Image 1 (cartoon, one colour):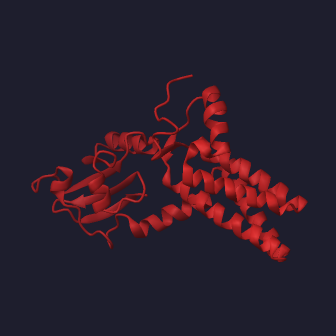
Image 2 (cartoon, helix red, strand yellow):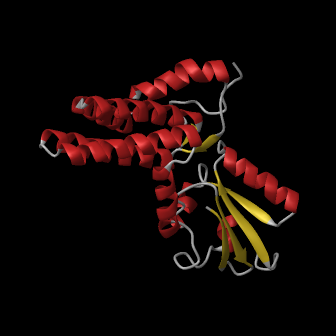
Image 3 (spheres, rainbow, N blue to C red):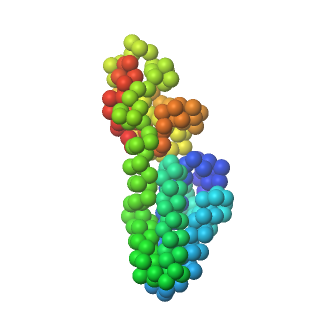
Length: 234
């Protein structure tokens, strides 16, 4: 197998994008089986597995082990992405599965069934089509937590190595060295020959904290004096 760019259990700020889809396929399939057979305990077991993985890490996530130890060595490493959106999706999955289990055992079987079917539908959609609604919710809310003209109106040019007599507009690209989408953005900016600077959030965590970078890549255009003019991503 080609050498991995990211270690699956150490480089936890990024993740092979195929790993969450494997997890979603397992969760979605088993949730559907649980609803169709009326086995509420299986929904609870899925919730427990998500909780263990979220708390103790990927080594304790059985679908993750299936992917990283069996599938990835065979098929190779897929594109790397920010690990926070799929982690948030798992948190939502845990909340929904726990609620569905509680509803079943409280006698509200119809409500538990509806919630269980919702989890199954969303997870299987994410697994097959790549549309992870939990991830999209994370990215949407990131707009209110991260860099935006109305929230962080200015990035200090000195923080990102720009001088006051530089270009009228410069792109600031907050990135991570193992993020595949970040590399795509870097290639795009190079092709378009747009003036830009790269801020590695792994080596400059203080800037990520200062400017509230909730997801990478985050790409914004700033003026010569540091005013945020436009958000390009996310």
